[in-house]
Length: 355
Image: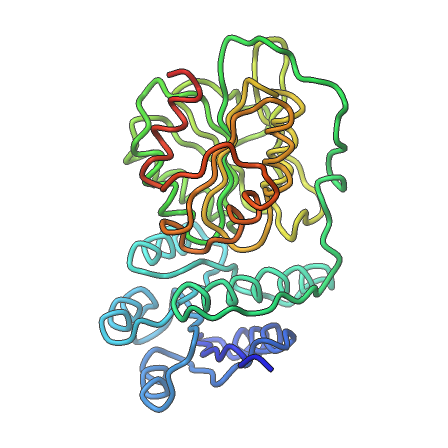
């Protein structure tokens, strides 16, 4: 039997600690070794037993989560998942934590509907297992905690070919764990006249707002959180808002996005499979598909559909991935025309798009 992933939960709220513990221990491959009400208590527990993963609140008394993260990383290289409330301030702080070495961000769990709790279990447990893999090289068996819907649940596969000619190429990009840094590297390398991009990065609601603002401030291109009806134009990247699916649509020569609610697809909302399927249907050979670092298989089938529709497809190679899950699944399905390092993806995109 595989050893369970030992998690230390750090949060000043007793309710959140209890909820996180219940969510994590619902997965047979995870155990909560301890909880801590603040970083000082956590530090003492780590001295006694080093966990495989730490979940860390962003805003806490005595010491904030980001400060503790920096201290922790200098002494114990433990995978850390930041837990934050859905506030703009908290989102910006959590994004800063990713720069300091945090693996991923999750929404602070709250009691609510049965649907919310079930979806929280799926997302939180998957992220913690992904975090454990990034540092300790441990393979954890996957467990289905709920039926995993495909893109069919949101958008049916079309038998019709997309329009052959268009005035512009568009780029569809999907990423998950490790994707925020990968997107920074990719988008910073894009010239001001780069093809228009539609991006799905697995993140909670509001965090994508902060991510888009951060990237917009450091890139030559414009980066914004997508709104329903936004045009996909050269020099602009649209990031799907957390908790909403995003689809590429076409009206004449104009490409635009639809942002809609819907069920989890491939365990995610937004889903890369939904984005890629819409690209295969409405853009076809006028699109380029890119799948990057992330756990699971979201986007793998969609990338293959894009390739079958005539699009050029790119997967990030293993060495430069934080988690070689999504790209690996796409490669195994035969969905990737090119497998390249993160640093070479921008050049590859521009080359196959004809820029």
